[in-house]
Amino acid sequence: MRAFRNGITRILNGLAGISFLAMVILTCWQVLTRYVLKNPSTWSEELVGYLFAWMSLLGASIVTSERGHMNIPIIVERFREAPQKALNCLGEIIAFLFSATILVFGGLQITTLAMGQMTSSLGVPIGIFYVVLPLCGVLNMVYTILNIIDILQNNVGEREAV
Image (cartoon, rainbow, N blue to C red; front, side, top):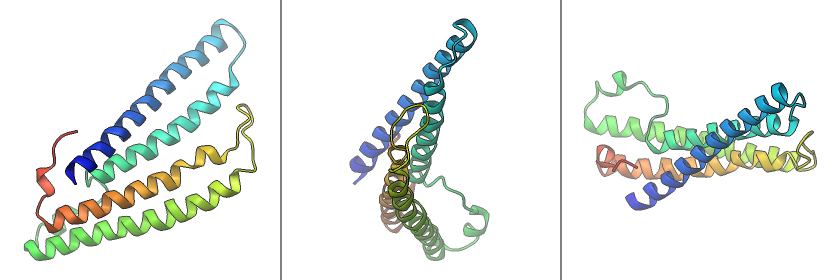
């Protein structure tokens, strides 16, 4: 299971890195076209905005894989081991429900709705850029299940660095 988690995380790190690199290149292109060529590139500006959203959501999934989402450890650490496990599992269940409701269900709704709208500069359906919402929702749900398994098996601190 650790190999599965690390494989997904490597792919997400790669996608987030590629998004970041593409954003840097496109932003340099924007500066070049705007100030040197005096003919601003509108499509690259729009694409950078969408890539930023993708990179942010992919990064949020990476944070979920590392159990780095928001919590208050000072309260949980005051309990004994069994209640700590229960509270940590509860936090993962809440993250799972959020991902299922907001990202997957809501993301599918908005993606379907936005498929009929075209982007102004790129000329592609906006829904294509919203696909990242349900995708990251599913990834977060997988990671929260894996996190719960790790919590219950006391494997929380034993993950390999990716």
